[in-house]
Image 1 (cartoon, rainbow over the protein chains, first blue to last red):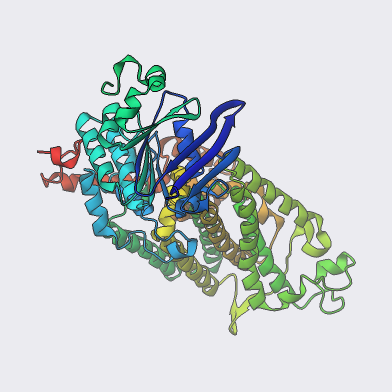
Image 2: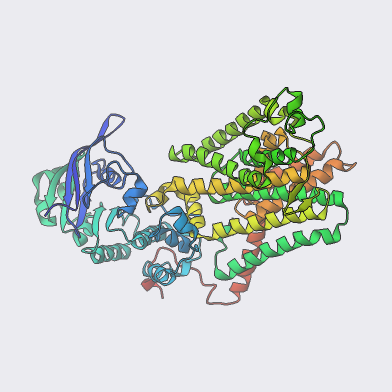
Length: 250
Length: 382
């Protein structure tokens, strides 16, 4: 079977620094792939390349038979790619409800949205979603008033509302409590199969909870790939990343 | 912190907002019943026109975050389109061939330039008064927004464009009347009805256009597109990753704003009975920004009332004996105070008051007064 998402021989440099150096990654449909690696390994850059935030100097990004590397961000999003950022980015001046309305983006054209009321008929689904992430009471609050944890949840809700086929998560559990991390893992497990998911994460406990196949990146390249077990026994991985703690730690 | 009036979003609040807008428009229509003086009515009509431009700016600046310092460009273009039509409607005092406008005769122009010819038709002029500003806005917007120019650079580009247009009009005296503008105009006549600048009819014409454009803009802000514009103001990069074409939305905001400003410009010519390069002046353009800021840029009604209030006050102060020398100082003090104390303008003050009132009413109901526990998922809550 050919890969659903295929990054081939990607190279990117920032001011002469090679952030990604010949990265190859292939992910099949419905898979949940974890991307781990030490700081500066190019994990976030890899996500940026897929969603179009960063342009590759060379190489190709193919998704569902389409070449993404030269498409504009909004067209990539329309092709079915959703992204959660490391620093939670939501619309701070808008209420939680309006944030979700913006994320429900089945119609993206100017004239299509011009003829639609700001509050669509998705109202009920929207409230269920808000309830699901624990923001039902804060629907009318401006997002600026939310705590860091709540902002994380709001962005996850935005992704669920967007309902993209391919979901890119950049450190979704940063700043979350133990319980919240468990819940995030639960959401990821539930989305698996229906959606293709790529998760960048440092929390190894979380990775163990959700990861089928783990890709380890190091210095802009793929270092190892395999199950949690295989990766944690990999000589080189232990050396550069996991250290003496082993994958059970962190 | 005062919350922007755009945060008022519940269904009940939407109805309240609608009622408020309707009440203000009704009040505007009732003014001629109380004011018999045609001279005063003309002046009030002028203020209403200025309110319309400020309202248009609030759409692009307050909602979409595009600080357009060249708002007077759309206004001036609309104004000149109307003036050209009204000029051709006069019986020229110094007639050249084909009823050439007098200033062309003085400038030794022998035939009517091609771009003046269609303005024999008032319908064409009215169409052009809206279409030309919209076209200019779209072209400008295409370059700015496709090139992803943001922030202060947008302000610089729009301001520079305004200055260029202003200089062009002053410089091309044979075709534009130059520094003197286009004066000595006929009265606008539509469907066999003539609008005398000093009469109730012109006032009602302005009030009707104001009402229609205010509600059209309100509808835009209440649509999903309006919501996306506000999201763009907050974080345009994030909006892109939801699949929205940010440049197209920003062009929409700029174009609608230009259309309303162009319409206002046409009405300004009808009310003032001339068009002049001062309508495309940098100082007028900056005044529009100030009116908008004082009234509250995130509220269409606020920006409109801000302009009417400040322009009215300016008129009254500059003519009163007591403030003859100091009125600029008084105006300056007001601006500084508003900018320092009320970041969301007078509308922000009103909306903060409304929220406080709502909170007071809610606190009587113990269930709704409960504080939201931050950072915890729903099922953890007692």
